[in-house]
Image (cartoon, rainbow, N blue to C red; front, side):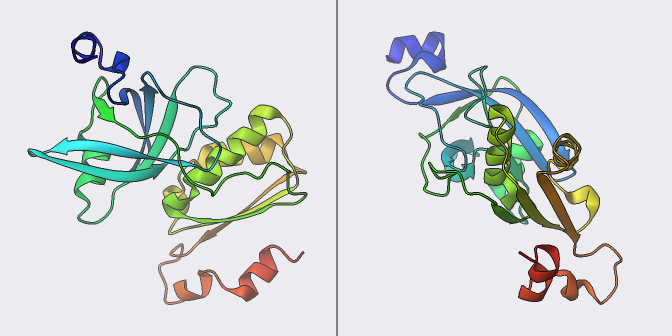
Length: 211
């Protein structure tokens, strides 16, 4: 396995790695990485996460990121979507420095925050910022399978241009106008002192999703 890994790190049976196939800037501080996992990878369920390792400055860092791709994707690739955190060494490296062709050690999919076996009749998703990533995997899975239920999706972001996957969310809205109901809330849209009023509250939820 050690010698095979020298030829192609994805062939290793000793450790699971992924090659960066593409990078895409979702917003000014968030990037989607398309990864091709190596041997021993197993498909995830929508909503699950993986561990990702990165060597930076002679040290090895590991963080957990939700998979933003659908398990129904047929090209063998997966995606994670990372937002730069203030002082975040690893998130800054993944978003600003990492290039196509790099290899990353990854773990197998984990986590219980996932679509249930029995489809909920009318799911409600409430997301904020980069917390949308596991829900995006679920929405993409609904769309790929073609069985999207009656969904209300309340999403919080400072401004419209900060919405990760914003274009795709509106495409879903246009594709399924009677099923996918996007309710964006921009907490700093007007730059005034009323921003606190636009943060999540029971009263606001009652207004956005009365049922």
